[in-house]
Amino acid sequence: MAGKGGVTPGAARLHLADGVPLLRPEEQVFEAMLDGWRNQQLARNLALSTINGRERKVRAFAAHADAFPWSWSSMLADEWFGDLRAVGG
Image (cartoon, rainbow, N blue to C red):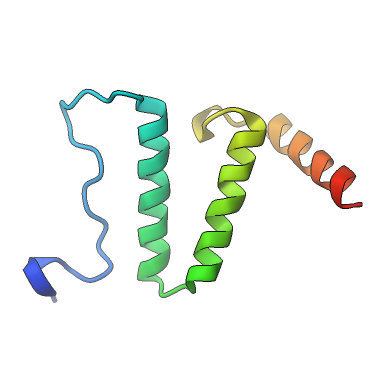
């Protein structure tokens, strides 16, 4: 069942097109991944506060790791959790 403009409600749209060079590929792919994840969560009718909180956590981890998700490892996660315990008590 399509909505306005023939778009199905809750459907994820194309974020990256084939054959188009990216200026900052890693950053742009990361942002597209987060946009797609946000759309999936919206389609599940999750609260904006839940979605925003999750995105903040992912961005905080990415900043702490100084790496994009495809470079993350269990060691980076262990360091992150250790730092959170040290700061949070």
